[in-house]
Image (cartoon, rainbow, N blue to C red):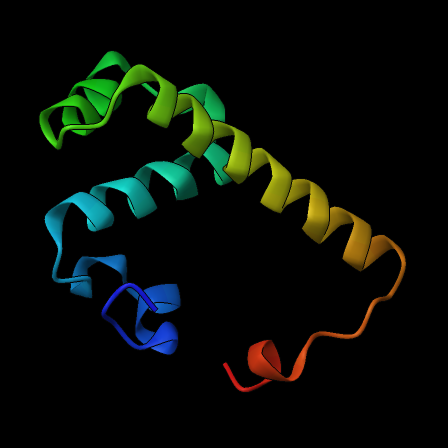
Length: 87
């Protein structure tokens, strides 16, 4: 996925070889874990990678959706798919 083994991406996004993807993953993680800490510089870095405002908003929305999905899965004691169990 994204040119890097999933287990490495989850643990260390700095290993993603593509700088744009690395920046996007870092931003998405920040959105999901500490959205109140997002700064103008975060958006500037994404813009320098060529992302439009619409694409930045999509990253924010998908990060929020992932958080919501995790809450639903945890609250309903959903079992992880095999793919995620291997990580």
